[in-house]
Length: 365
Image (cartoon, rainbow, N blue to C red):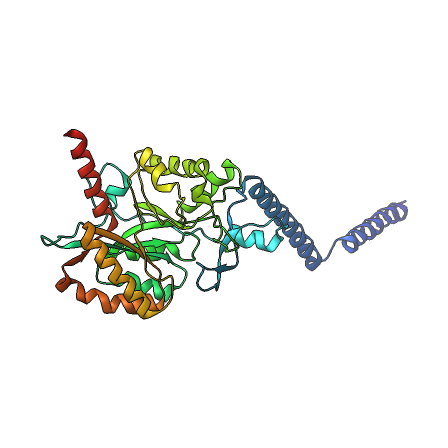
């Protein structure tokens, strides 16, 4: 009996040992276990990133930028540059979405207001007035298309006179360049790309008269949100857009709300920009002379002489130039001669303020 009992007990033990042994055999090895766990977490991670990117697509404004090659031109010479441009209709790859989402957005630098008593933005961020000797004529030098060619932009910023510098909003690294220009004491404008006549490309986020009002407003918002401390706007190209009164009114509505001034570059004699701005009570002025329609040093010096004559005849004259090497060399030769000629370079805000002060005084009288 005892033997039987032992046999059963031993048999139970034998069965238990076999069962335990088979369970151990079926258990995954530690390496396989960790690989499975790793795969599981990677899968969860990819699903999470996918949801994140999909949510981003739902909320992503299609006018937000993507880098591409843009041929920058103002009718004189084309320069290929890599600049931010509107997203195309093509399907964006997973990696490009991920890169866009993980790239930190540039932080805009906003410098303190220059005039604490100013009521509108164009007054608050205006350059300090220049003391003009009695009897001197005044000239305003506006330099357009800044920000693309960094070296030439730096040379204009470093000019030791109060220039009015107009920056293309789609240029890379634009906020830092504008900050340098503002710190140097120049007036800052936003050089808004607008639709021209002909085949020239005004650039990304250009205002096109053929697009809907909603798209125009989106592009206006983009162009006015790329840097800070500006006092107004002027048009980059725009011979087509500035003739469209309805589209111009849409732009000026935003300009008035933001308290900015307007410079009409007059790329077409039929521009509605100046007249419509004046009707809306927006501070506005226009261009008298283009300095560098021909990129030739002697030609530019001739245009500067023309500017002198206009300034002495009218008291003030405004010229627009570009950051070309010929323009830079001509200005460096011309600027030192102004003192003996009785001419003073002033920022655009100063002439606009004087113009509107006279207008207000005339209205009171």
